[in-house]
Length: 293
Ligand code: SF4
Image (cartoon, rainbow, N blue to C red; front, side, top):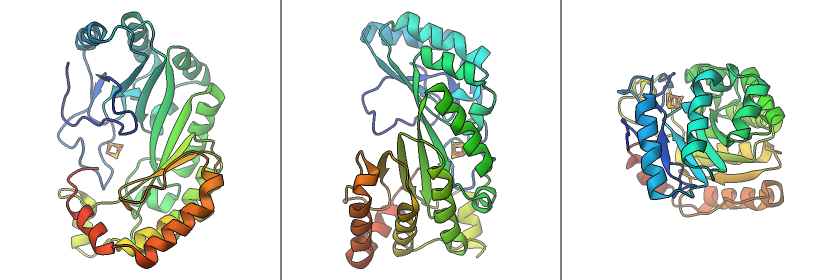
């Protein structure tokens, strides 16, 4: 198999085979991310993709699921993507779910009809690292799109019938803009129909512009307590009828599962309990020891 640089495996699909169809990230400019800093974006050669598919077919000819790599494998136009999807179906004829994490902007270059064809070829689930629905925050972290883009592209996915996840990056607006980040993100997420909303907590990694800004006093990271308060505010404002998962920030407390709305009050109570009684020093230590997103 061919793997280049960082390999991100969706932790919720730990056994799905991985297929690298692109390398690196087309954007590579988010201020909190170092995952693909040293890997220029490229499409993987078709020869490599075919070799890998042959290998996967030898290992598991009945495979029904696969995750595409790398950071945003759906960035390519439909014309380039279609032959790859056809090839996946040729080598793995029982494939049912092709999953990829990708950027909101990667949907822009595809029509709804093209998205529908992608679904017919197996692309059933996409994870969008949205991070925020607040324009000030999106500009601040150099995400490369605005809230209006999130709405427009998510609605295209809904029309095409492709399920999608949306992520909220807790803490990324810093102390100065925490409230707006939480409330405005929930407002944008509420206008979409994600199958799952996931949250992760910001860690300032060495080499990131955001850490350098924090060291210069231009960005004020949230304390663990403030992270929990921001997450609680986001949850209080979120009304999506979807699954909900949270990790990073409150390791050890499982708030993840289906039926967010039915569990919303319990999640808020648990977060408040963490705010009042949680081992915040331990949470900070866990965060300090992280090495990547
Ligand atoms: S967060 Fe995602 S889109 Fe942003 S630079 Fe990292 S991999 Fe690329």
